[in-house]
Amino acid sequence: MSMNQLSQQGLIQDFYERHRAWLQSWLSRKTGSSADGADLTHDTFIRVLSQENAQQIVEPRAYLTHIAHGLMVNLLRRREIEHAYLSAMVSLGYGQEMATPSPEDYLLTLEKLLVVDQMLDGLPVKVRQAFLMHKLNGMTYPEIAAEMGMSVISIKKYIARALLQCAQVK
Image 1 (cartoon, rainbow, N blue to C red):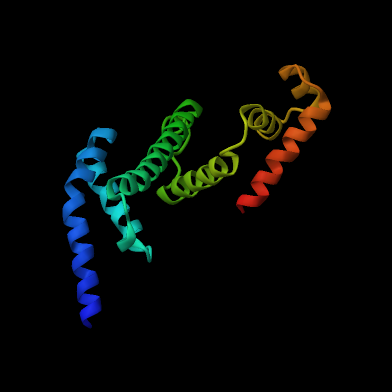
Image 2: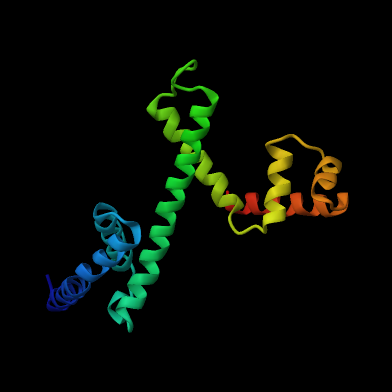
């Protein structure tokens, strides 16, 4: 290892040692779980260290908080979707009258739900609502327009916007 690499490794180790405990404590409080705090801290530092300009961070705590917050939101969102999926399975009778899906099928379905969530993320509420009414409920544009108290033209534009968003994520 060259002197420059040893010096850089020392800077990274120092950065980690100075900020890890604080970040883990902050994340543990935010998530209510020390295990989640530890996992998210690890993921945050992996993200930071994979960036080339990690040594040029001016405000370390603000930078770490920004990255950690995004990772925490993703974790909580994933859990929310997983909980909704499990609730839907229970309400449909899985595990009682119907056979429970295999772990592989469960994870594949959950991943598909996460992709759909990502596709719809950032859309205005009315656009998302119209799109879901059309795709999930099979409602026609005039039915959606009547339900939402809007014109058919607006509903067409909303669904087109949602389809465009979905196409951009793929």
